[in-house]
Amino acid sequence: MKAIRLYEFGGPEVLRHEDVPVPEPGPGEVLVRVHAVGLNPPDWYAREGMPDVPPELKPPFHLPLIPGTDVSGVVTALGPDTGGTGAGRFSVGDEVIGLLRFPTALQAGAYAEYVTAPVADLAHKPATLDHVHAAGLPMSGLTAWQYLIELGHDHPSPFQEARHRPIPLGADTTVLVNGAAGGVGHLALQLAKWQGARVIAVASGTHEAFLRDLGADEFIDYTKERAEDVVRDADLVLDTVGGPRSRRFLRTLKRGGSLFPVYFGDFDDAENAELGITVTLTQVRSSGAQLAELARLVDAGAVRVALDSTFPLADARAAHERAARGHIQGKIVLTVAD
Image 1: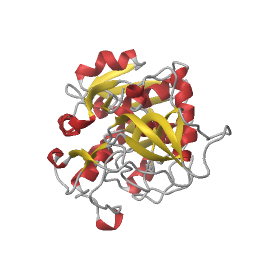
Image 2: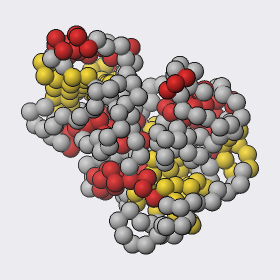
Image 3: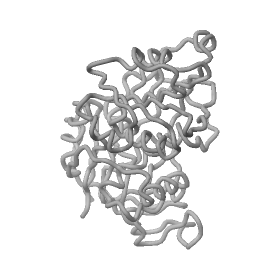
């Protein structure tokens, strides 16, 4: 089969399109003929060798590796202890989606024509989506779900001892989503609206029409004004950008509010306590059951997956170069099979 592999860490130029053996599914796994692959930040973090992550927090990498975790495809073979018609079971010919082995394996070999997938990580593909759109759902959708709706696991974050707990969302709740046009942001906006919340979307001005069409009640163009200067008394900030500047959103929240940075930044626990604000984060984990809930919302019309751009598998380098330019609207997806 054809796959993308890297033999050294570096920029997009280290990605090679070449022939590799088709993997064989083990116990509890199926073999998936990949139709499309969703790109996510861990893909380029792994490609670079995660240079900014402390060695004790860095997962093991074994080169050469095939990147990728998000797939949409068709089951072509069953490993031992799989199959049947029970919940969480799949048969040859089923169309499936999944976030594979994350975060226990930071990269699961999805940039390929075939990939093995744990049954527990898979859900049936939404019937209303083609494979290309469906491949954009797993990691971004599960991140939004686990931050906003249900964590669904007891694993602590590697960056914080405090356990993350989503807050109840409803008509009396105001949610600010920073980075609202991106993969996680545009899905989080829709989940918050599904729960009935009022949503303030923060992005650059080119994304305003897109985000209002998804249901944003208010839009802030960060190139013209800063959200922390104009927003007060929000109940929740989901900062999909996160990092060192996430702390600035503390002033947008009411006492008792919550700030959820997807990428942890520099916070002071004493300051958070004085302001009465909870700051927690989590690390997204694979969950076929939660992905099935998201798929049902997609088929019900409550959630849409937007595409920024698509690239053939052989052009994975160009896809990573597109990601590096930023200002992404929705998801970048690799197309693999018709």
